[in-house]
Length: 511
Image 1 (cartoon, rainbow, N blue to C red):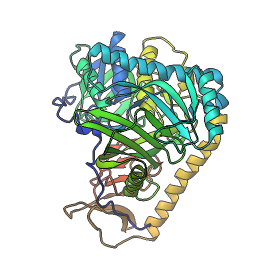
Image 2: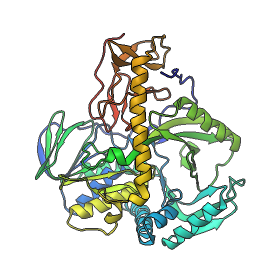
Image 3: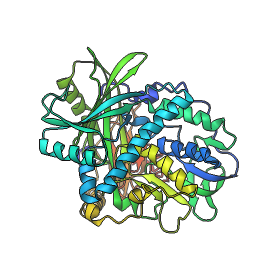
Image 4: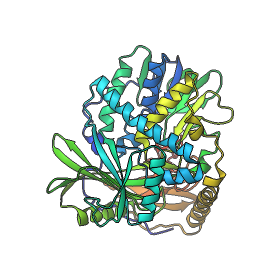
């Protein structure tokens, strides 16, 4: 077992800007208490779930939204909130692996999502800091940028190749997309949630944990206190709680980190992204307290990659080398799922689930893809078949684009499973725990996850993930147990923080 790492003192308040600035705006939650029947049950109240719900209501469908936590407190509440069709070097990839027509479909879907968000903001008079801004994808590889610029133009986007990339003048080149946008995602979604609450054809139940889904005609969604019967169900969660299409083998979870920074001076205009295995994301946010620079990056596979606290420290160092930092106000992390062929899964969930739909695998670009999912799924449920759904079809076969990556990712998950079990069973660690520390020990041949909190109390739970029995790893920055195989996360007492696991880690006696 590797030596445990310590989070230590990290800069900034440990919450996202979006949550910190709206925590007083939440109405009292209304958990589901009684059985009822609707046309569509939507599981998840992030941008994909609420976009689906409001699009369905506009089509006359009755809707119930079920959310385990509060509105937009999951991935949507921990994004950098860029509304852009510029998703890394995606268009060169799509043109090569899927063809020019599919690349054009992807581009038009993303652009339509930006327009849809802007339209709703105008219609509902939402004050959420929406601004049109240019977006830059920059790199020190001019050939890569030239290919992406050409592919984006061929897909119908107004993309320009530039060699001046303020504030990253050392970058060799960039592709610039004009008329992109940023906004405050939680303020936007809280307004949509209010619209649904005021609508007799919709209901929204927060703090309602879905425990089981029975597909069929109709479907039944079971929660801890009541059941929703629905003709159709939409799974708008990070990972589908019902996996009939092998999603666990076709996408993998990644974590990334964000710092909210106040600068000594004016922040840069525009949005910036450097792609690659260790990407960087930069954008400005304006609020009543002034301006914040949001700096993101340091991505890695969930449960792998060593100390997460060090990720924040490296991000801070990078920011201080490039900007005049006055204060780090916030820090937060998020989790996204990356399909092996880089295209989200939007559509019918899989075999034997005729009336169940999914929206997942946004690869870190959920603001436009989640909005698109709501629009496309509402149309399909209402009897239409948008052409773009062929591109996003969860049951698609893309061996050229995905075979090698699928093999690699599944071999990695199998390796983590085997290695962690061997380490836990052969080399148990009985050294003492410091506050904020976690490690796995062996007791009676069983691995136990032990963590000591800031008050000095030890929490002991099973170290075996309740999803597919991998061993969890300690996340020292967030003080959580993370599964390195498929991304489930648990708090020190074993409660599920993120799926695909749907059951808590059982408590164990302290060794």
